Structure formats: C-alpha cells, structure tokens
Image (cartoon, rainbow, N blue to C red; front, side):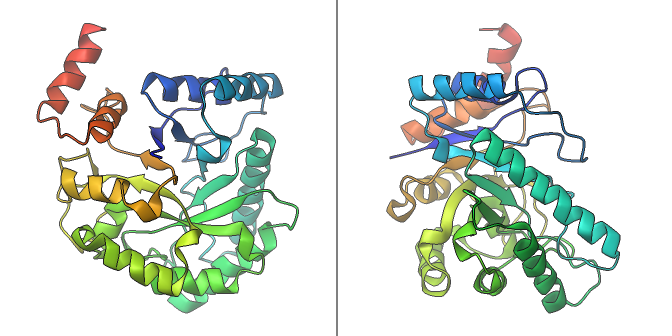
Length: 299
C-alpha cells in the first residue's frame, strides 16, 4: 500500500494534533515533523491531552503510528568531537528528542549522521557510533534512521559503505535503520534510473529491511553534484517518471514516503497537489500555477 505524506509544522498550541490536521488537509496518510525549531534546541513541554486527541483522530482517519516520523534537528552533529562539551551536548539533546518521540508514541526519528568538519572520516564515523551507543537504551521502542546524505561539505553517510560501517558497530542493532532521500541519492552520485541496482547493493550489504522511510524530493542539481537542493516533484533533474518508479517500487511497499519539496514562492505548500500527482501517477504540467491559484483564490 502507498503511504504518502509530507513534512508538516508542529506548533506549541496544537502540537501533534495540529501536525495531523495539516497532514490530513493535504490528503496524506503519513507525515513527518520536527518537535521544535530545527535550528535551535528550544523545546516546549508536550501536552499529553493534545497527544491523546491526535491519537484518537489518527485512528478515525486510518493513519498508522508507524507512518508518523520525527526529524531530528539538523544542528545535531555526532560526528565531530573537537569540542567535547559540544559533542556531549549533542548526545544529550538527541536523547531528549528520543524521549519526546517516546512520549508522543512516535517510533521513528530521522537523523543526519553528521559532518566530520576537518576530522578523519573514519574517526568521525566512530564518533557517531559512540554517540548512538551512549544514547540508545534497550527499552526504547524507537529506531533512529540514518539519512542518506548528498555529500555536501564533510557530510557522512553519503554511501552504502559508510552507513554499513555505522550500522554494523551500533550495539543495539534493532534500534537503528536508514531513511533514503532521493535528492541526496542523486546528488551523491546514485542514478535513480537504475534504482533497483542500488536496492540490490543495499540489500546485499545492509539488508533492505533496514529501510524504514523514504524522503521523496526532486533535485535542482545534476547527478553527483553534492549540492543538496530539493526541487518540486517532476521539476528537477531526477524527473517525475523516475520518482514514481522509486515510490511504487514493490520492495519499498508499505514504507512511508515523505515529501520535503520547497514551498512555491516560499509561501505556498505544494504537498496537496504533489500527493495527488503521485496517487494518479500523472505529471501536472501546471502544478506551480494550480498551487498559486489555489492559495491566492482561497479555494
């Protein structure tokens, strides 16, 4: 079955309930959110009443909790230990995010593995492993999903070998998995026209069962650009048909697909229309115009 949704907001006054309602307005049956601003560590206390209301509405709307994803703030960097105090704080903050997920009942949290920032890559990979081993507990009903990265700057997790290195050395192996990102794969050098070949290699080295989420984004940049700039579905270098083949790949059936595509004119969310395109498997050449007219007309 296709589980498709997008990144949605998470606001202090509405929290998970508000995130759910936004997702439903786009026609989603999956969604992803940050539990606070991604660029800082300020967090509001979770309102249990709002969480219960969200859970009840999710049941009524046939949205499974397994298809609700939290994204860890991108400021968390477990790869660099140059400043031990900052490294320890990153672990503490990520642990806090894990606890917030547990309180919300969310089972998956996506994490950018981190950047070496001048340190040896293997040393930095080991820092990530140490951090995850310090954070994760046996009783946690959660998985941290390492996101495939584009290779911008000194990012880690840019290929199967680096992901395997981390996953093989994390002690609680049932607590870690992978989130594929189509834009990042393209920008790192994976031609998604040959996506099945990539899945074959992934399955051989890591195991396809470790893939628990897919971020579906087109790319503004060519293959192997290492830029990481998302484009709207069908409006980038990957293309609509290739992305449809990824989304509907039988080996990724029942895995939530999450859109992180840019707002139109930095103002209008495209997700309702992109989800409709994906469900219909038909590219809308007037997507930008339709979205603009919809929001400006207040329809």
